[in-house]
Image 1: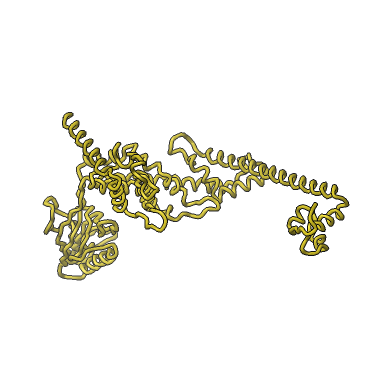
Image 2 (image 1 turned 180 degrees about the vertical axis):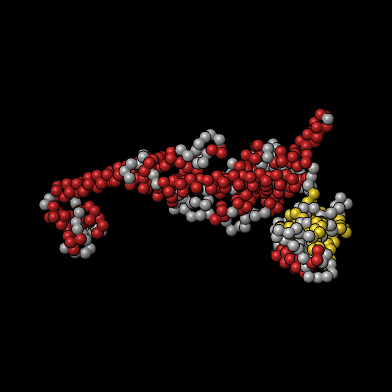
Length: 480
């Protein structure tokens, strides 16, 4: 039996005794449980009828809950059917098994159906009450989704090609290919219409300057009687075609004897001892334009000195070998299976409710992110080699597992291999609360080496690696 002084909250009064606001206003505060129970019995006639009303209320709630759940399940099922209908419609545009015939890739289906356009198309199909009828799909929306797919395929192809070029470029850097510079003197005669006689293109990458795309021939026209007769009459003039000033220029200094003359593909990097930078390329073009204009008015020749840069590639055999190493299937697949490639290809159309990740729109940023772990690994390998340690192999720090009873975890969080993998993946390693993180490869190597020395395993690992290297050399010399 409830105490006469026991109180009850307003929320419980409405929930347990089904009293309305009008009923509660008749009660005095604080609400005593005895008075509330009596008011509820008076309202419903008896305690049994009160319990029956509460039971009916609970049954009605359960019925509405089940009805809502069934409605949601039906809606979800209908939406799933509509999504499958849209997927089948998109896949129907694939005309064959070849990659060239695949317009909509399997990995892009989920993305396409979840874009704003895809969700709107599904909503319209559900309103038609025929979610499995592909003919009811919005044609404009389907065409727009197909354009999204084409764009994604193109972006995927472009970034894949760029990754291959980056791999080849990285491998070719090991061939000691170089840029050589040489100086020339260019004499622009008076009356020349085409200046130095070359088509120049701005070159923003290293080295910055003006790329010599091709040479132009200048035509010196000497009209008879100081005029040309056109129309139906015969043109009486003597025309002589000669090479331009840049093509006829003389090399005055070079660090390579094989440089004899300017060639298309060379880059003008300085004019009259003024070095060209990315910011001064427009000024350099303006200078040569002025030379061209002045040559048509001056009676004296104009003399300038240029410094040009020429790329000296390795032999074709070495280049082909470098390409073969760079595009080795297993190595190439390691880069091409990066999830960033798919994210980049789909970045132009975010999924409904998601924001655009702007860095994914920039191809160079995505490629840098893909290559970053491998580049960090190369830097770590170089730094550890100075300590006669290595990352790879059975005794490599990435593979070797140390006894944790003797070798404690670094900062009580990382094993030696896990801290290296963490840095390679993230470019940063935390050291716990209130401590600065390790942000450079040099800091990580210093920390790992210090930890190994403190655990008395530094010299042992060095010795194991040294012994294996000696054995490898002996086996190699025996085979030879």
